[in-house]
Image (cartoon, rainbow, N blue to C red):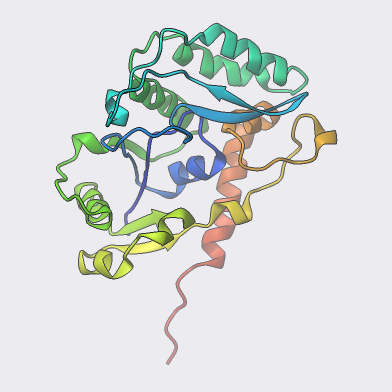
Length: 246
């Protein structure tokens, strides 16, 4: 069984994306689709003394622009972003450990958003010790326009027979068509089982679905990896295929 997960390349992703780096053989980054405002391609959320706040990489937009063709705006200030993170998590035990990985990527001078995100995801994956390969869909031989057929093509190109799918794809994913192409679906439903850990600014209560930066500042890279592996192991045990009985 070989698994692939497909998502538009996120900036500083949440734990659900990071789990896919452990669960799957390949994580395919959908960079040849239109860039849209309001998503997670150029931003994500952290927790501060004043509540949740967005970390945003400003970009330059044009009509019909693809994610791979989206440039980072000259206004991007990586030093300011790093200061924001340090201030937000100054009281956490692993903030410097997190910044050690983030600083070189944010300050690398990337021109294109996809290059920044790919670099960051590569370094996050390495810091977590996750085994998945990262692939850009623009580099895969796929020509189908239909969403489900494109996913089938991505699975074929990455050698996968199982698609690791989030609940958001239920609205359009045709599992019958995927099955016709030899691909089954495993719904991961991560948001419903998001783990709880000792988060910064505890009096605000626990806030799920933040950037992995939040978790790493609290637990460190090794601790975050252990959290992800344990939760994934539990989930896979609970959803293991039932053996046939005679």
